[in-house]
Image (tube, rainbow, N blue to C red; front, side, top):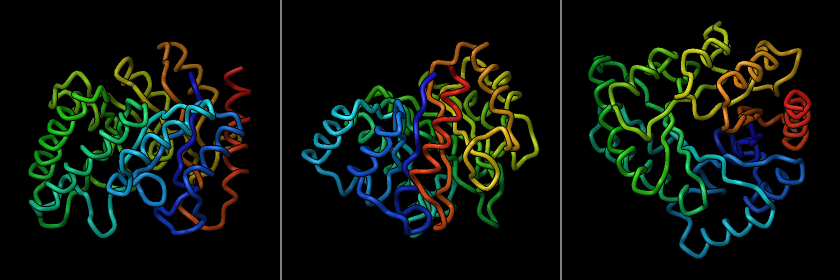
Length: 276
């Protein structure tokens, strides 16, 4: 198992500050000791339309120089363009799929191979089955494009933020219905806590289809023994299934009042101790 850190807390999503250039973030995350970085596809870090070929090569060289792998990438749904793959607006669904494809390309260009899929949200007035069908169709299209770039797409249940793919069951069902070999699963302990569920249950049920994990406690706090999730049990359960992916800290990004370096260091040191 390897440790990665999500870039949101160093960027301008969903709050505007603190905000640092990607080069600065790469150096800080590497200095703390992480094996990889999960980069959110938002400005000022990695919005695809803002990165030409030369800039992509530059970022990849920067990662390599700091011995930091690109653990994964994820889009920035919401806001002005929406990028909701379950939107009742056909134009928005098309734009969301195009954005996912752009992020898949960027991920591959930067040396990564994992793309997170947030399955959108059901808008009032839209039938749930219709919203589900739209996200399933979108995922199939995104997965086909990603496969051509050697990228695996992982479905994340986002119960605290959405209303369509809420649970372990939802994610497993969507994956089965899409039926693509490069579509796998992930979960975030923050969302599991929101549902008052047990993270190790997700590990047992997802099994070998579990490809990626976000670690965050309630209020997006750093993992710790004082937190609500049992991180020692999580690591023990992951060892049972020989999990080889990244444990990615997605923490602290929902507020301005945060010291990004400190929360990154706290999470790193705590998980390193557990991993031994």
